[in-house]
Amino acid sequence: MVITMKKTLRLEEKLLRTNEKLRAEIEKHKQAEKSLQKNEALYRQLIEYSGSLVSYFDTKGVLLFINGLAADILGGTPHEFTGKSIHEVFEKNRADVVKKRLRTAVRTAESKKYDDFDFFLKKKVWFRSVFHPVKDLEDSIKGVVIFSKNLTGRMLAEEKWSLFMEAATDNFTLYDAALNLVEINISGLDIFPQGTQKDDIIGKNLSEIIPDFFGTEQYEKLLEVIETGEPYFENAVVPPEKFGKDRYLDLQAFKVGDGLGLITTDISTRKLSEKKLNNHKEYLEDLIKERTLSLQETNTALEILLKKREKDKANLEENILANFKDIIMPYIGKLFSTRLDEKQRIFLELLESNLKDITSPFMRSLKLEYLNLTPAEIQLADLIKQGKTTKEIAVLLNLATSTIDFHRNNIRTKLGIKNKKKNLKTYLLSL
Image: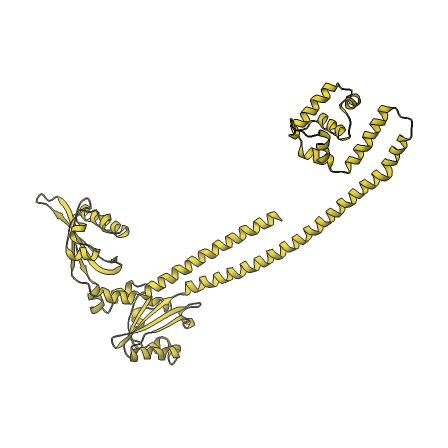
């Protein structure tokens, strides 16, 4: 039963760890979803940033100069950053990237251009950076100057957020007022049948792209967004089967100019994780029920066995007592009626007394509580309990009275009553 319970506990712990991992994965997807939902407002704020960011590092990665706009982006003043290392200026991930690019510029002695984005003061900024090695009059590289141009505003205003859409992990599509597709990012193509290219769908009406969608309540809701400007959200939308089985999308629609912006987030993985979690939960519940029933049955069987054992024990004790009373004691009585000398009678009395003690807890209690008594000391303790004097015991055991006194002292010491005013016979009888 103990082994079965341990296996059950290990299995339950394994299932609980699996469930916790699934919960963590679901929470991760939820957080990513919330973050992506904030992107539109975030990028509208980023359009306010423009201009060039200039900084200069020596070959060891120490910042020697930074202009006010760059320092402001980093959340400080030029004075606060000057003289600091790359890892003191930037957070670790960004610092590692900048350090690698500085080394490349120094090693190749060539300018390198990079287009990327990063978070500054918790705001995502797109920029184009040029890492240009600076040489002295002897043509030795003394450091690297970085010119960075904030591209966020121009990209949003002139390119209709195209760069943002291509970098976004959500599916981003832009429609005109008639719901003709104007733009779609790379991620947006993922919801279409495999192999679909931009040119295959750009310019087509939404009713052509998804015929089953035309005239539905959701389609009418999109028209209302264009008309009223009120955004529309819907969770766990199931697209037509041609877009894939077991797919679930979260839909966000908002007005962009005279047209419509549509962001769809594929939550299929999250939904499948939730389904797996529910399946594991049901499995765990069924397993617990099964194990509980098994344990109940085992407990019932053990209770039956214990009751039978107690009954057998009681029967055995009854048989021993009956045999002692009906078989042994009659013979002892007959011996007492024979001609016995004094010593024989004493031995017979001791035999009768000890046989009676077998049915009492005295000897068992004595041996269990005081296992350090020697066999000779146990024999002597039994005679003392029978009321025999030191002289009588010496005669019975053929020992000197001094030896008996020696054993008595040892018994009192081991029982913890030496030098105490306690009668040894009385104490032994109390055990």
